[in-house]
Image (cartoon, rainbow, N blue to C red; front, side, top):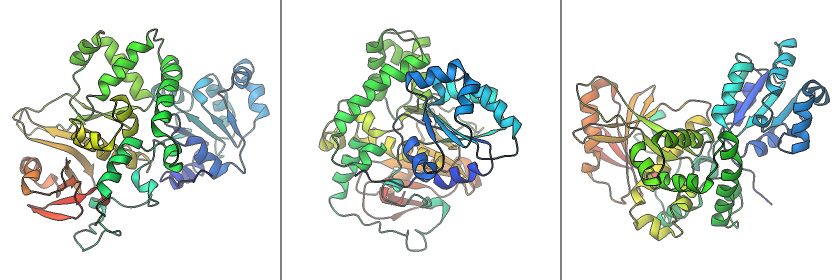
Length: 413
């Protein structure tokens, strides 16, 4: 029997249902949207999927009659299949504007759906995002605070042991290859590579063609794999387009498709006038490391850890973990990177209430003071705005590195 995994978003979703007439829950296919809603409201609310062609046709042909058939409270799954329904939902909501918890709408296409929601349901809806699982959700600690939110490490503890067994490093790379989609996390016996192959094929055949009329899916798949090979690196669309053999405008459109369907996200450089020339290109990350490894052809944990992409995979894991953690709290991640033309860099900068948090990510089991060199440069440039820094590494214990920077094992995130 599939294990249900509690999601960090559950209390946020429950609160939104008491405050807004409409809640829109978006995220990639198979991220657990339907499972979450069945768990929370399945016993009280009908859940109507708009994927089947006959149901979709009924909603398009007679939207008012369709809504009469399914009065609120109701969940409409994959609402992007019937965008015409949104204006009629607005009509129903406006008749009872002060009544919260009328409709929950789910979708797997961000830009397309959000344009329609903004036009039809502005001021009437809360929009929440559900991505694949975070590690804190997988291990059963979905509400655990991040290190800079509660200084438990400096006080002598983190609420959990930071000492990992010798096998933990192998387990880490196994997890990177397997990824964090709920079906794989809840069913350890599932063949991850077979599932990932099926997911990519379904994604190419459904979501990509729904978002853009792409005739040559083979070339798009080459683009997807070429982008995966650049994960955690600066994104140069001209070089990428040249390698794939497409126009830069096409590469830009195809990247927008991947962002709209939650397969990738971009990290922008942090810009403040510090009197230095800063790198302006964004960095690209995949929301799931398992699909990333599948796309670049990695099958074994040993090859992933020791290969040329080892550092990029670990960085992708950490950045995606924090990105998902903030989204599952109902917050937009205020995450950036910092790099100067002279070569000083910090992998991740987080804007928090405590200040700017500089974070370096190192694929090393031994913490060394020189790992914090970029953090030291960042704190020197940003002064009081910069908070203590962190080096996330693959070692087993938390250690001070000097100048307010601490080395933290992955278990502390």
